[in-house]
Structure formats: C-alpha cells, structure tokens
Image 1 (cartoon, rainbow, N blue to C red):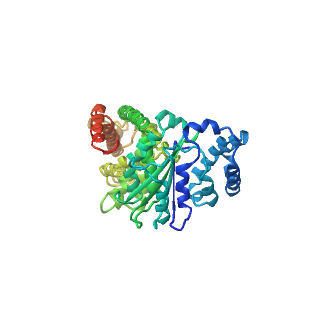
Image 2: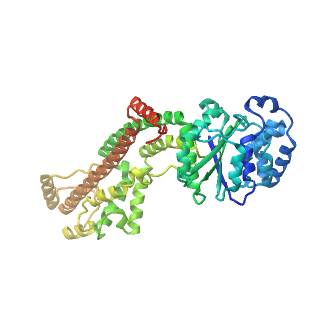
Image 3: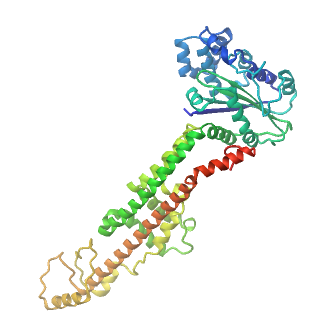
Amino acid sequence: MPRIIAKFGYMKPSNVKRSSFLEYIATRDGVLKNIDKIIDKPPTTKQLDLMKKLINKYPEIMKYETYKTYDENKSVGSASEFITEVEESHYTSLNRSKEYIEYIAKRPRVVKEGTHGLFTNTDEKIVLEQLKKRIEKHQGNIWTGIISLKREDAHRLGYEDLKSWKILVRSLQNELSKNIKINPVNFEWYAAFHNEAHHPHIHLIMFSKDEKQGYLNKKSIDKIRSAFAKEIFKQDLLHIYKSQTHYRDQLKLSSETYIKSKVSKISRSFKQDEIIDLKLTELAKILKNTPGKHTYGYLPKSTKELVDEIVNLVSHTPEVRELLDLWYLQRQEILYTYTDKKEKIKSLADIDAFRSVKNIIIKHADNIIIPTGTTQEKIATNTKEVRPISIDQKANTLVPQDTLDQLEELLETGNLDVGEDAVPTSKSEIKLNQERGKEDRNIVHYSLKLFYSISNMFESSMISQAQKYHADQELLKNIKKQKIALGHRYDDK
C-alpha cells in the first residue's frame, strides 16, 4: 500500500449537493480535543445505514482490515475508520452519492478554528454560508480531493495538526493550479483537516473564477500526488538520495572491477565470452554486406534483432546484472513513496543513459575486419588435399616464417611423421591457420573495445548521476533558505 493516498473527483454544476459537501468538510462534529469522548461509543444510526449501503454497493470492502477491526469492536471510531478507507478507495463515485453526502454533514473529527475547519491561502475569515452560496451559483466544475497519510507517518513527520497541513497546502497551491489547468489568478481552493485515528487527511475543494477553466486527468493527478509526497517525505527522500549516491559510488567501483576482471579473463581465455564473441562476429559479417547507413534505426529488422540479442547477452552477464539491480534499488524506494506500482528491472538498452549501446555495438562490429573468401576457398586455392587442423587454437599461436620453411622441407622429404589430427599437412594449411589466428586476435581486440566502451558508459552515467547529489549540502541549504525568505517554495528549482 502506498504511503500517501491522493484521490480526486469533480462535481458538475447540476450537482445540487455541492454546498452540502462543502459544509461536511467544514463542520464535521467533534473538535480535536473531543475525540477521546466519542471514539468508543456505539456507531451512530447514520454510520450503520451508510455502511450497509456501501457494503451492498461494494461487497469487496468487507475484506478491508478496517472492516475486520470494526466487526470485532463496533464503535464510532472503528466505523469512522472503515468509512474513511472506503472513502479513499471509491472516492470518485462516492462524492456523487446521495447517501454519502447526507452522512458527511455529521461525521466526527474535523479540526475547527471557530465554527468550522475550512482554511485557504490567506488567514482572512471564511464565512461558511457565503461560500456555500457561491458554490451553489458557480456554473463551472468543482474539483474535490483527499490527501491521506498513515498515522505513523503523520506522527513521525509532524502532520498531526491543522497548522502543518495549512503550511503544506499553501506551499503547493501553485502545483495544484498548474496541474488542474487553472490560471493562478483565478484559482480558488478551500481545505479542511480531518484527524482520523489511523488515516489523518485533508479534503480539498477547488474551482476557477473563470468558469471555463479547469481540467484534471490521471497524469495531472499523479503529478499532484508526487508533489505532496516529495514535500511531506522530503526528509525521507533526502536520506534516500544520499543512500542512492552511496550506491552509485559502489556501482562505479563495481564497474571498474568488472572491466578489469573482464579484460583479464578475455586476455587469458576468450572462452569466457564465447557466445557474445560469436554473435559479434556474425554481426560484423552481416554489416559487411549491408549497404547504407550503419546505425540501429536504418538496419533491416533481422539485423536489429541480432543487435538486440547482443545487448541482451551483455545485460545478463552477472556483473552487468548486478549494476542494473543496484541502479534500480533506490529508484524503487522513491517510487513506492507515492505509488504502489512496481517498476520492472530493465535491460541495458531500456535505460535512457544507455540507449546508445546498440549503436556502439554496431560501430565496434563494423570495425572488425573479416578476411575475404571462405575457409574452403582458401584451402582449395593452395592445396588439393586437406587434413584436419589441430594446432592449439586456444593460444592462437602464430607459426614463424622460418618454422614454416622447416615444416615444408620435412613434409616434402617425407621425414616428418604426423598423425591424422596432429599438425597441418601442407604449408598452405599452416598459412591458413596463421590467418585464422590473426582473425581470432582481431575479434578479441574489438570485443575488448566493446566492453571498454560499455564500461565507459556506466562510468560516465555514474559520474553524471553522482554530481546531482554530491553538491555541497550546506550551500544548497543556504540557497533554499534564501529562496524561502523571498517567497519561493522549498523545492523550487
């Protein structure tokens, strides 16, 4: 479950209950100091009636933990908690419901200043009856919202009183107007803080003086939720960002270790990356016969698929996999603050910073020199009979010219006793094997260059990311203090 819940809806001018909704969020019975006096009393008739109708309409809500708590201990408090959770999860349909509007006028635990709990962007007195009449006459849409926290987070972060919520909403009013597509000059909002035991929350009513303005979609709702989350959990996020920087430092070291280890392994034994090497060689041969521009977007589909396969192979090497896992670890922590959607771990090419890896692979494959003519053509040109070649190809040892001459002499005189699979049986075969060694070395050379390029991409990205969070924290604090003194928000860029 996300740590912050943000639900939004709207009421059309034809909705005659809009002023009743305003009265509800303003005047729920029971100020903060009276919570303990009513919380353990039996549920009210209106609570029982509403819960019955809600269960008939949404049967799945009986699975909620708050309903189980209510079922075990039927009281005003447990009933209110259950209704609050239903309110949060079915907000869009509920704020058009007759039963809901009728109930909310007498629901407990609004925190009041004077006769009601409404507040706005100034401390000027709000006359409830006058505002209700304005709402009734308003011919544009009115947007409603609820922002809810878990009690433990509200307690830990200091959002258990009206003052804190006032400061919060006022600091974010520009975000609200921007995302609801209302000019700040025309934007009006009113809110009330409801201090529920498990889910303290605020209700919002928003509209435009220009009745034609205003539009809210899912993307905008997500941005509003994110803005509230970043402000409410800013201390938590600061800790996460610092932790993420620490991980990025580790990633950079891991990247260097990975590259050194990889280069060392390839130098000693090319078998370590045999599949990648084969695919790289295959790509080089295809590119040699592919006309036109050799960039990913211009290649035939089948060639793109081969490039994608190489990217996938590289991405799933243990070392790169570890980098990707660490890369996303803290990113996920940040996302969970304001959404319960999990972001899937992606391959190397799916990360913006690493998308150029496809063209880097193509470039390196393009630089591999593939000898002209096939192996069989070379053999046919130089000898009539060919025996299997078994010189140790793991070592890729090149035979010196004087050794070639000696071998040729021994072969011609018949003084060299060889087995069927021992050594080349002609000078042409030895030369062919030498060419193969050159080709293999060529492939190894470019494979190494490819891995170096990928490591440079990691390192460059790590440095870039680290720079965002390695700035002098004291300097940033001083800059923010100066901005706040000038009337800017805490998180203004």
